[in-house]
Length: 464
Image (cartoon, rainbow, N blue to C red; front, side):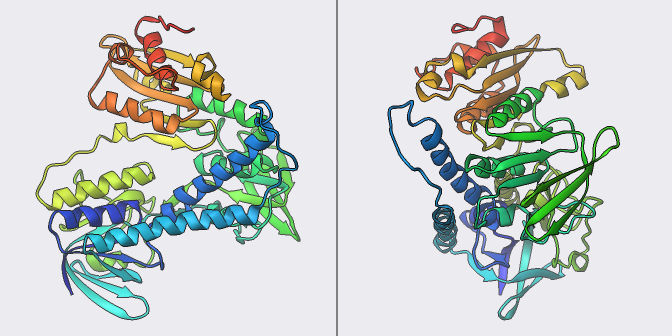
């Protein structure tokens, strides 16, 4: 079969690229090695984790805040089996939705492992072997969980995020290696359900890639859930004996320490997944971090072959992959798209949520940029008091001379949705004063964004 474009991988980057190619009149095929479409995000990542986060938050509210709201409930219990069942149904609905979109856009779907024979020939190895000829190829094979030397992930007691989404019991003591996004989200799920959670982190803070103010506030909030944190610890091993896991590490003083629990979640990031692609046959190779090098058009060193998402440089985010999928499709069609990588937001779906876009205060200081900062706490909002979501703040960083917003950092209720206002403002290079002079509905959480801009531009918040 001959195609204009063949996409390898059906995650958010791959399936979006395929849809946009089809919309632009290209005869398109997509290859997925697993039985369902959607990649890590829809099957074992973004979507199922959010389903469990929402379910566990309902339980936490039932046992901690319902009484204050005047809702009396008795003998609230966790039905973990039903939580997992609901999560699976949410995943099923989403993956079936992608299948529908493929049919709607007349995209041919091949199930199996796609590998290069030549730069224009792709072999699909599945129930039967097929060969596809194509003018262009988009590699969108995503990533897989990374590990550490000396750790044997048995997928039973020493687990990755994939297994953490399918546990049949609530851990008594969950030890998380890594204080990043995935570990904190899944730790929140089981922490709310009653697990003791210990986070062992190599650096000096959680979510170390985000603004320091967010990490400090999130750490304070998670401690209230019963989390304990061990910073500046280098994990040296993890072993299983029966139902007990022992994790060992060296602390900052070089002393040996250990923790014992019933589950250990290894959450030290993800690495590009290019296994089975036979890149060499197309003249491709990966860099020292396993990524496929690309130019400013996301084209590899071989003309006509593009790569997007987690297999290339940049943040491993589903929405970043989507933007790149559209970018490449439109580039192939002869258009002139653009992506501002500085304005791709990052989100942590704990509660409160954490979201950020632009530069952090640490980055501005390192660059010697002259800036001003303004912040506003959620507890000063009428809406937050009404919903009992008092934790968190909005922090705005603006250029000291022009007042242009350089960074927005939010921890609080609905921060994941609020950050879109910051992205829009920064795409149009708005000043803090621009936002401060715009009407924000009352009472809403987004008033905190306006107040933080007031604080940044003239240090004159109204409600603080």
